[in-house]
Image 1 (cartoon, rainbow, N blue to C red):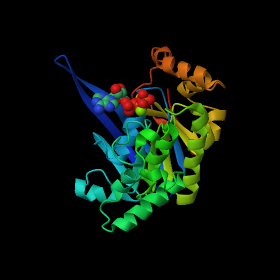
Image 2: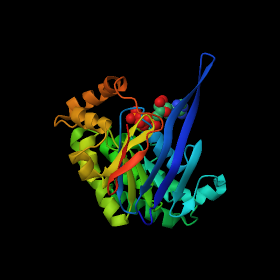
Image 3: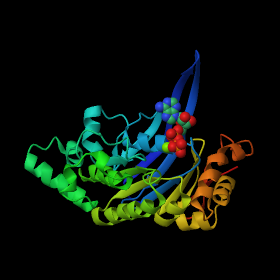
Length: 297
Ligand SMILES: Nc1ncnc2c1ncn2[C@@H]1O[C@H](COP(=O)(O)OP(=O)(O)OP(=O)(O)O)[C@@H](O)[C@H]1O
Ligand SMILES: [Mg+2]
């Protein structure tokens, strides 16, 4: 990739977990090197606990990587002071799964969308920008003065999206942005995200359990297993002809038409595959077709 917007090099994150006097290390992200081109959507899939959220959080600097680097538009972010990092953090935002816990129940939609703009001094300008962001996501000026409790789940997620775009970011980590919503609302919010991407020139890392959504919207897809990338490639090629045994099983198990069945299968998927699949620590990612990388073993 010639000029990726985001690139990570050998990014790793270990958590030290203390339990009943015992200390253990959880390697949540292991040696992840990837690139995300400006304007694309990188889908990230994998079973629960495979490190998807931790990877996104490390890229945003919300989590300090144990080793490796993150580069944003040519600037290496890892190792910057928090003040230096602050300047870049507006460029990078996150949308979480749960629109109920990500909003403050005591502040109106408008107040919450204005919050990230608070460094701008002109209040009128802040208000106008916040209203514009809300309008873009389908929340009118009249609705903007309401508290979160008077909105539906889908509308709350729209407010959370307005909060993310109001600072005019270039990159957004969407961490299961539609998973908590009713099925009927999921498609609308997914469409909104795609529309915003086109209109605002955004780049997404789109983390999802829902492989059918990833297949639909991701330019490229990365598959994680136990903190590692096992396969990454153009979405169409990866879904049509998965190369890694793990990707095969994941698609076979989960790509079924009924969402409820898919969800249940994915929930039980980790246990069924874990004992059967051991990837040697030294296995490398190999480029099997242009831009399609698969871990050996
Ligand atoms: N703050 C933390 N402290 C200790 N361990 C953590 C912490 N955050 C994540 N982990 C562990 O790191 C691993 C990866 O977690 P992560 O949340 O990144 O997975 P995920 O792929 O996003 O899972 P899910 O699909 O359930 O959201 C898990 O084993 C998890 O328990
Ligand atoms: Mg997660």
